[in-house]
Image (cartoon, rainbow over all chains, first blue to last red; front, side, top):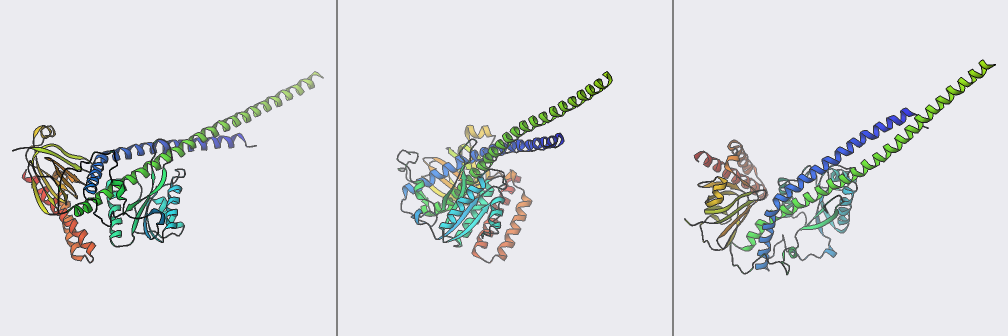
Length: 300
Length: 145
């Protein structure tokens, strides 16, 4: 049976921990809101860019390029793959990091040869401690996703792609599903990307293919130049999605930690009161029996 | 002079959205000037200076008069039915440019260019150099305004 002092200490340490988890919860929710707000501001730009790319594909269906010439069958994926893994900087976010790393590991098994690019300190440490070869000079922390960061990442990846270090580029990230929930860890092919993504679906009429444009010097050149901007937008949205999922996963983890702490505190307080009551009862019994024995002595 | 609609947008903010009399900018094919009723056109924009003359309500609201200058990076230019759209990664106003810093960047880019061995190094350094030079040029405009 622990003493009242021990329980008191325990209560103090639990409530201190609860203060921390509570603060982490609040911090995560602010961080998430800010990241989403910044992402919202860039949305119109990338939507327009996407629309223009779709228009070019709609007009000139036959153009091919190594960036988007897309006849790659997912089922027989093998070959030399570049894998961009987006993890968080810190743990304490439920299964968030594990899920995306698992996704990357499955993708690695399917590749004959791979190069791994890791964003976020957690993933970096994971691959290091498990002795998996990663690109050492590719260091990006997952502090706060920004367009500048997405631009740097895209440039480094495209440089390596242009140098022929890999034939295909995948990105493993966590899709944000809104609210308090874990996102889905998933992978997507970035280069060469699926041209079908841009083929207008039947109902989409925002691209008026009947307007004739002059392309200077030609569609392919224009397309390849703005492709990079588009890739930046894609990487940025993957970063923001992952970041939001991380914060939301952390909010969830901290929320349940808070609840556990409250429960634990209730139990401990109950135990503490029991002990205190026992002690008091015992004291009273001792005093009253002492008094009785005194009285019976004096009565004699 | 006749005016046309101009939508000038950088990835993180809208630069100008309203009527304009003329636009000139750098593309892969060299410098190009656009007035009202230009034929439909799509081109890639390269890093350089965009000059435009805003007019009408939107210009008044934003407090702009006369020729405006913006330093831009890669992007896309579209002219469609007398509407001009410029989409660029980044756009900076000359007043946000630190000339001393741009000069240092220029010097560094020249050094890098001298030492560059691979094609990629040359491409990187010359891109950096052209960026620095257009920033310097734009910040000189600022003094003349």
